[in-house]
Image (cartoon, rainbow, N blue to C red; front, top):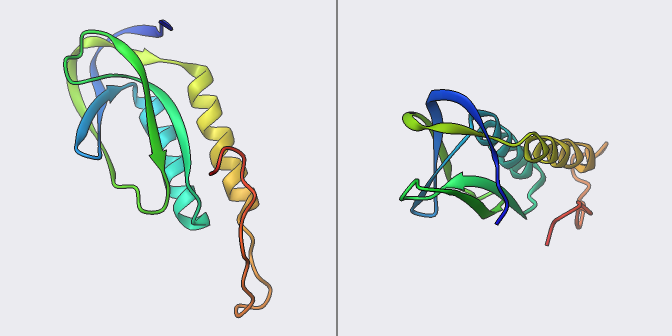
Length: 125
């Protein structure tokens, strides 16, 4: 099982509510996930991403798969936690890279009546 870095910071982390389940992860990870969901909404694309999070029992962190896209209903709220914040710079960097690639791949029509059939985004289904 992969281990994740934890900050020495106890206190506020973010609880993500997604598809009726709740997960707790670090602030930077949650913010990067929300940014990616926002970008996917404008591009009308979907993808699966993996983030480290505590599940309901909050005993140990594990990787959680999220299928995200324009209709994703994700809520991230700050909560107090007795656990250390999950910190994974590689996950945050990857989420930011995906958000950037979605933003770059989102075509803008010179003619508002022009239609685009599809987008070729990395990691999309």
